[in-house]
Length: 289
Image (cartoon, rainbow, N blue to C red; front, side):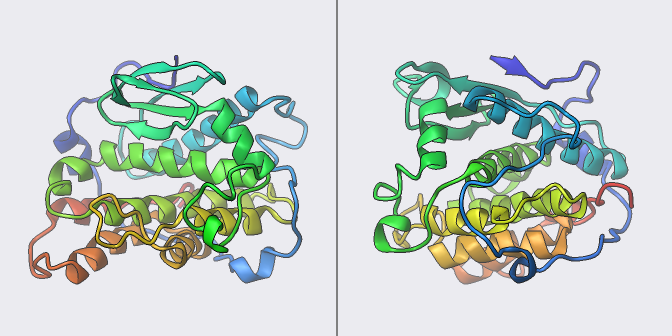
């Protein structure tokens, strides 16, 4: 297991949330429709164009995670917060990893999850490779019904950024505050939105290649599901795509709190219920603003 945990961080969600302050100013917004032309497995530029690029899936997962971590570190720093912390584990094909979130205490070849009990992102290298190759299209709920597809490096990057976004939610105390009040879908759509804001930052830095945005949109559609009556419902393909697009077009992480509010109002939760910690998430700054 590898770690991006920094020493000397303040502990406790309350401390983190009380530190959020200020107003957000956004970068020039990007429209998904303006940059999604092209298709196929293109290459996201990680770091600078002169940087050595990953040569295998393990390296790619690590490089994307560090790239996403760098983005959120800047967001938190510009919001007067300590740097976020997380560990990651890329499970080799055919192997398992011990986890508080796994069946029987382990995760295996189908793993793609952030486990708050471990504060760790777990992704199976086989799962990531199958996403890249398009091998999972008939196994995923959306793509198996003709919604989107999973293929290419940015489809994998979407998965990584989404799981890192769950760690951001954990850092902000949102799971603890609202986990018993709001359905799973609220957190999943917010995580998609957060993933889109990271993609916007890569776009603003001219690090996306033709087809990258389309790969993310297709992946969001592919992982959507239709089990609206299930407690584990993550959102329909259209909802997943819209949430990612919203984050990408705005580049504004504070706007993603709208998904917690909107889901609360449509699932029978009291729309007038006070959500003070959600207001803290609304104060996240964009890097450099």
